[in-house]
Length: 241
Image 1 (tube, helix red, strand yellow):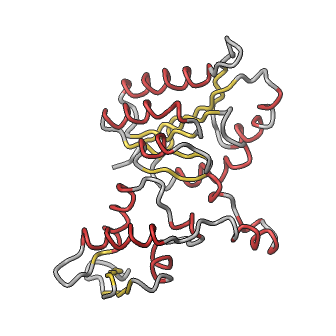
Image 2 (cartoon, one colour; image 1 turned 90 degrees about the vertical axis):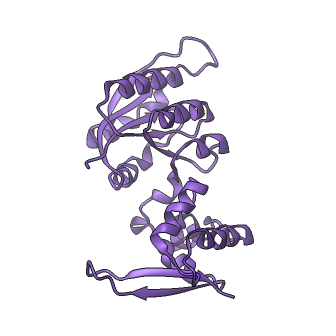
């Protein structure tokens, strides 16, 4: 089934520099048929969005700040999200913000059977993260191919460390889906990790895929098996004794 997504961006809370990488990431999960960004476009700090929006076919929605200190953008985005929900035109939503004010919206959309992907900066509060099916940190989407080797080295230091808590999470998840011999299909492990912790992403730890991340931890063993239905091998993993 073609998954149709509504992408709603909080212009006040997301840096414009990441939009291209963000849209490429969203395309992995579905077809972004609705793309809107909310903000007060009379404000100078949003001017840098102009070319980015044209290049990515994102529609700017004007929302004036009616009251000093209050974020009218949030209200406009929430109202639009509910209108889109009831239109029945999409299967899921991508809420792009680092603001916990969208926690209730994410919860409500999921209650309605929508798949909800959140994208925001690492400063995003936990309540919004756990309210989504999947949460992606925008920092990991930056295209490192354009960075110098020195910048890449600096980036390495920005990755999260694989702590004992992370290892324990992976180990317990393997046990949850393992067969009688302790082996678990890696695809099932990855899916359950995402359900347990929506912001779990191997890229947060400097690995493009889950396989090399698990392979780097000496608590687990990996096995490749022939796939009778296709050319790609199946990856299984289990906890070491």
